[in-house]
Image (cartoon, each protein chain N blue to C red):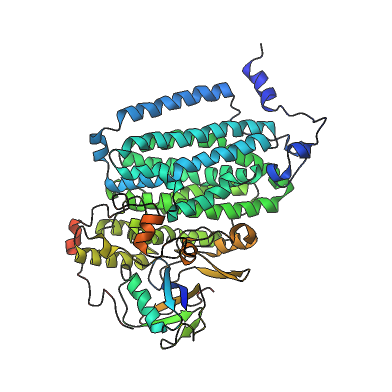
Length: 88
Length: 502
């Protein structure tokens, strides 16, 4: 099932629309967002994925993580400190 | 025969008691606005200009002559070619946002000219409507002359008739503020907040910038409009005085709502023009410095004078001066084909100027431009798409602008649930405005919702061509087509710049 998400990469200036499948892993979702933002943000080798303050495992699927349509996810490059308290 | 000072007060204050209809029937609350007050409450309504129609026509005739003289003096290809290409983008952006928005303001003023509760108010609003008609016609006339030299100027008239994402955001604001507001809300939103609080930023501040940029036509146009705005904006304070006596909480809510909505509009239009489109050698003050003078200083004083508090999100507003328009511009540059004006890639001297003007935020913003510049160098001149996004961006469910609130480190977008649906907002103030009147806003679809419901294509190129109303010869490009001498000194892209594995 197609799941549209609002994706925010730390360091970027704008949120992006991610159209992913509920069976996609979060690693795949992260790669999609990093590629989409590469025009503005130098790609990081490793990132962490958050929903609000909760970190999500990269090997989890979109559906398995309970992400529904138009939820917000945040990507934080591993060498950067989490911004903390993403609004939800 | 009566002298002017004898008949004018009588003519302006020509209210009377109704004998065969009630006052509520003549001025129903739905049209005249809330709170509904008996006529006595409005009898002391006054504004300082007290212009007669004859004086109005004579003054406007003189101003029209000045505009005509400038129009006759410009329009030659040589004059046009002397203007900086980046500056012309500022003109295109403002002209499109201005012309038909002013036409909507004619409607708002005419509603007040009929349903305003004091005859002096109705008379001032009648002249205000004529002002706004003039402000529609001037940019349409002047910019029409430029279409033959640059077809992007065609968007001066076309803009509001398209489903371009900026036009959707502009209509969302203009429809509510100018077309559908009752006269009381119109006076607070338009005459007081927008015209008293913000348009000095544009008509005085930007006019001075136009002078520095050598654009006499745009400077004259702005100044000519500003003299009208200074007069009819006085309606706002006069209405606020009565509103504060009878319903101060309503007045404060209206201020809080319309200040935020106006701020987002001006941050995008005037912020781009002052900090990115004005040639670096002509810049004197940053957008933030203009806002500090005209809004943090003068408008704050005006609020206090009426007994109003600063909006509840004031600290957030002040913090956004360092970030918001920069984040929107970085996003617009990398989606420039989605707009009708060209964009400037800030080079080392521009970035040094911005770093000096925005010392607290620029260290977070500069990496974005370094990355864009790296890719521009790798692409070489003429290859627009290597510095252009291909994934649709997301939009705020209130203001309809891109989600660029907060900082690059922490975007301020926030989610809310209403009626079983999920909504996203660029900022807490936008969420607050939505939550106060969800029935007003919930059914309006953002570009994302239009894509998801199949009304707009998800493919970016198809979206630009078939939905945003752009064609390849009109859509925004890099103003120098990527041919910047300074790019040769930029670092080459690092390994992995075109994508990585996680």
